[in-house]
Length: 633
Image: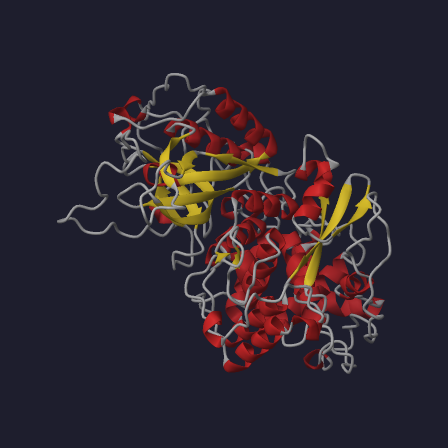
C-alpha cells in the first residue's frame, strides 16, 4: 500500500469538475508527484533527528493555489461583479502574496459559485462581518484564501472538495453546530479501518498496533470522548477563523496533517527549554523552526481519515459529526495523547493492557497551548477531588468530590476576567452521584455572559458539542459554577489565580450560607456525600438548557441591580450594567456602539477580535461581577 491519500496515478489538476470553468481561472500548474517519503536529517539542539518529513513540507506547499490574472481577466471580473468589487474595495486589502483586490474578487466568486444557496448566505454574512478577510494565521493568508485552497487544490483520496468547503463555511458561520457524535460506519469504511488498525505497517501509518485485533463491534462508538477537541474547534471558529481554515485545508490534503508553529515560552513559561522535553515525553512530532520556536505536526491517523471520509455520506443536519469535524477532532485528540485510537475512541489507560476514554487535565492544556494563538494557556483546578482513604469493595479507583478550591464568587470572577480579555473559556465539568462519587466528566466552552432581565441572574452562553442542540445554550451561574472541575485560562490570569489558590490552606466546603449555589457536602470519615438527591421522588427531571436566541436576552435597560461586595473578594466597581443587544446569531454583544458603518456594526459578533471593520475591543469590556449578599460563601 502507498501513503494514505497519495494517488501517483492522478494527473488532472484542478479536479475534473473545475476544468470546464471560464478561461480566467488559472489557479495552479499541473500536479507533480511528491518526492520519495523520507525523513529529513536535520539535527535538533539535543542531537536528535527531526520528526518532520520532506514529504510533509512539499505537500503543505501544494495547498497554496497559484492565481494568475491578466488585465483582461481582471476587467472581466470587475464587469461581472461590480457590486462585490465596490464592497471589497472598501475593506482593508490583505498583504499576503496573491491576495490583491482582483484575486480576492476571483476567489470569492469561485467559492460562492461552489456553494448551495444556504451556505452562500453564510458566506455573505462572513464577508460582512470581516471573517473572510481575517488573516490571523501562521502563513498570514486570509480565511477566504484557505477556503479557496480547499476548493481548487488536491484533497486526500476519498474527500470531496465541495462537501469540505460547505462544511467549513457552515462551521465558520455558526460554530454552535459543532458536534462530537460519531456517525455510523458503512461496511466499506469498517473494512478499511480494520485493515489500517490491525495491520498498520501495510500503509506506513505512524500509529501503534492494537493490543488485540479489532472487530467490527469495536468500531461502534455510542458515547464520544472528543469533547475537548470539539470545544477547541469551536474556539478556533470563533477566535481564529483563518487559522482553522488553514488547519482544515492542510488536514484534508494528501498530507493528512497540518503544521502549527508554537513558541517554547508558551509551553513552559518558567523554563522554555523544558518545552522540548515535554514535547518528547508526550511523543509529539516537532522540529525547531526558529529561535525559541518549534513547528508541531498535527496528524490524523488512518482510522480518523476513514471516519471523516465516510461521514460525507450523511446530509447536512448536524445529527452526526461532519467530515471536517471528524478529521479535526481525531487529529487534535491524537495530538494530546498518541495512544488515542479514532477507530474505537479509546486510549491507553494507566493500567497496562487497559483502555480509558477522554483526556487528562494536562493533556487538554497541552493541546490548547499548541493550537491556540493566544500566548499560552494554563489550567486552574477548582474542585478538590480524591479517592477514599479506606474504600469499600467496588469503590477502588472512584474519585469523590470533597470541596472546592475557589468560592462561587471567585470562580465567577475568574471566568469573567477571561471574557474581558476576549478569551472564551474551555472548562471541564463533573457530575456526581448520591454518594459524592464523580461519575462523568465533560468539556464545554463558556463564550459569553450577561444578566437575564427576567430574573436578574447571571447567565452564561455555552457551546456544548454533546447536548444534541445545534446552537449555543444558556446556563445559569448557579447551575454551571459548582460543576467546574478545571478551566483553561490565559497564562497571566491562570498564574495569578493559582498563586491565590496556593496561598490558601485546605479547600472550601459549602455550608448553609452557600445552599443557594452548591449542593451541600458534609464531613464524614469517608467522602463528603451529597446532602440529598437532586430530584425528589415526586419531582420531574430538570428541563434541558434553553437554546440561546437574541430574543431570550433583549437589549433593553436592565432593572435596578445593586450587588454587594463579598468579604475577602476583590472586585472593581462595575463600569456599566450588563446590556445584551440583539444580533442575528451566536453570542451576545456587550455595549455595542451604534455609530454608522457600511457593515452594520450591530450585527457584528463582538467576540471575534481583532478583525477588519470591527468595533474597537475596548467597547466590549465586561464589568466586574459582584454577587448579592445572599450568594456569599
